[in-house]
Each structure stands twice: as structure tokens, then as C-alpha cells.
Image (cartoon, rainbow, N blue to C red; front, side, top):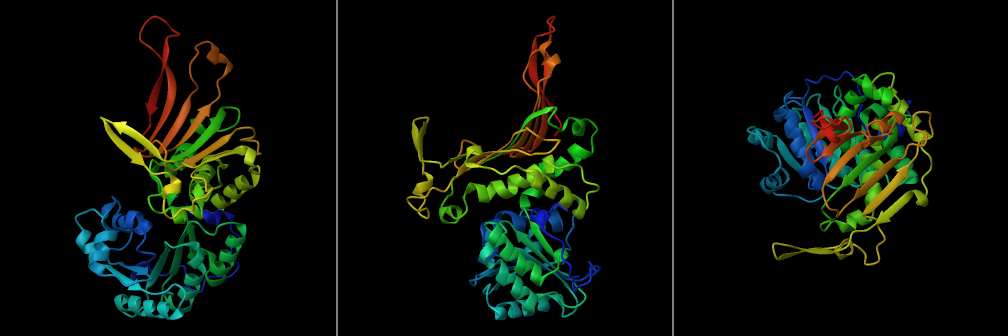
Length: 422
């Protein structure tokens, strides 16, 4: 239900070839395509361990599941696991690693997927099994992988096949349509999960409970009471040698049109009829259609430069974006963007939604900040506007900034205080 990109997709007419009721007791094979990359090391292997052993509800994935890393070049398995599973922490790590393997193959060669099928079947016992493929690869190879899996590596009869496709799903509308034609032409819609991992963050998930599990917020969640909404993503690190990749996307495609846009959709959509996939999708699409087109007059773009500073007499230097060896010397790629978005519907008309995202800034921080409108009666006790802040990272928290009287006889002697709901 929390899948990101599927909000904009039509439903598939074709029914899946594999049964929806495939047993969860069947062997499960998980394939990480692009297993040598940063996402696999930082997020995927640690997340799989948590789902199998670490989280309070574990196992949410059977501990018997096998995890196969897939990449173009052969690796030494022990060295690979030491590097890519460095962030896996817990007393069951050895058991987890024992279920991990690696398979090297091309993304565009059918015979590679035929051999992958043999590799998976060997651990599945030769009978029915479920297979899950996670795409941690560039969009340029999505289509080839879908064709390869469909042709030679789908789950054996009696099991399900599911494809988890990480953002970005194309570069623009044209490339999205091309990729969608390939993926949806190979698999049924309920076998495809176009995801944005940012929606798995605890504070983002809490938007649902905050809005729809309480009585007070939804009544205030409108243009009569809200002055502005800020959705902010800041990183204190630069591109750190990954400038070549970043230069092909920029901060808007990398962060704003996926991560921040999905947070915006959950924060601003109308209450759905239910929290099932179809109802959430319907309200997200309605909100997207109500957005006013953005022009350059609504944007501010920037690029971080080099910096030098001293701490206790020690000079520190930080390279600028153009100093990254992978970045063209004349690059105009934005590493910072601020965009004002307007929604033309009864709830949000004239309320500015300010998206800000950047690399190489003064801190690492992401949050949603909702500023409420001062009311006429606030003249009686002047103070700063109330703000509801949802801190996504670091130090996850949810709090309300409110005015409170200072101890003493003066009624108007007030100060801003914080009501912590974390």
C-alpha cells in the first residue's frame, strides 16, 4: 500500500499467470540485482536481516529464505559479504550470511537468467517456490531484466514471482512510458511493486496515524488554518566521487520528484475511503492532478562550491561539486533546489508547499514543518505561530511548537514551548 510510483499507473487488464494464493510456506528466493552497489550495502542487506531476525515482529521473512546477490562481475563471496553486509548487526548474523550467495551474469543476456534459474532451483529443492527480485540498478537495464526474468527465471509452477523496482522509474514521461510498456507487458500489475524506500521511514509512516487516527488535526488540515507547509531534505555531504551519476539526474530527480513528492502526497491527499491500494492510489492521483504547473519563477536552483574553515586553529577544506572528477567542468546540474508548489483544490488553494533539497549544506536533516495561521484572537496574547514538525532524520521526532505562559503575574509574558509527541 505504501508503494510510491504505482499511484500514477493504470490497472492491468491481464490476470497474473501465477496464483495469488501461492503458499507462504514454500521456499523463498530473494535476488538483489545490483548487489555490489551502495543501496544494497546501506539499506537492503541490513533491512533483510531485520525482517528475518532483528525487528520485534521477526521473522517477517522466513529465516530459511535464500538471498542471492546478482552483479555483472564475479566476486570472492567472503570478501563480498564482508563489505556489503558491514551494516548487518545482530547475534544471528552468521546464520544470515550462511543463506547469502552471489551470482554473476549480464543483465541483457537470456542465458544469464537461465543459469540464474538453475542456481535458484538448486537451493529451492526442485519443487514449487516463491521468488522476489529487487531492482537496485539503473533504469536503463530495467527492461532487459524484466524480459530475462520472464523468459527464464520466474518462480516454478505453484509459486509467485514479484519484482520490486526502486526509483527512479525512468527519467521523464517518455522514458517512463517506455519502461512501463516493457514491465507491464511482461508481468501483471500485482506482480510489480514500484517503490520509494523513503516511504518506509517511521515518521513518514506515522503521517497516516497522525492525520487519521486523531480527532484534532484533520479539522485544522486546510487553507483556513495552515499558512504554509515545508518539506525539507538537507545533506551535509557532497557527491563524494559519485558526481558522474549525480550529474545525470540532479537534486530534483534524485530527491524532490520522488522522496519529497511522496511525503507531500501522504501529507496533503484527501482521506481515502480505506487504506487499501486502490483507494490510496485514487486520492494520490486526484492530488497530483490538482497541482498547478511549476515554472522557473517558482524555483531557486544552486550548486555547492568549495569551502574552507578553521576549528581550533586547524584548517579544513571541502571540495566543491565541480571539483568531483566525474563532473563536467561546465556542469549546470543543480545540487540545491527550492520549489514552491500550489494545489488548486478546496482544501489547499493558496497554501504554498515549499520543497527544499540539497547536498553539501550545513547539516543532515529532513522534516515536514506545518506553520499555522495566526488568528484574530492571538492579538490578546501575541506570540509566534504554532508549528507541527515531523523530523524524519536524524533523531526522529514529532512535536508541536506552542505558546505558554512564563511563571509570574503577567498574563502576556509568554514563551514558545514544545509539546513532544515522539
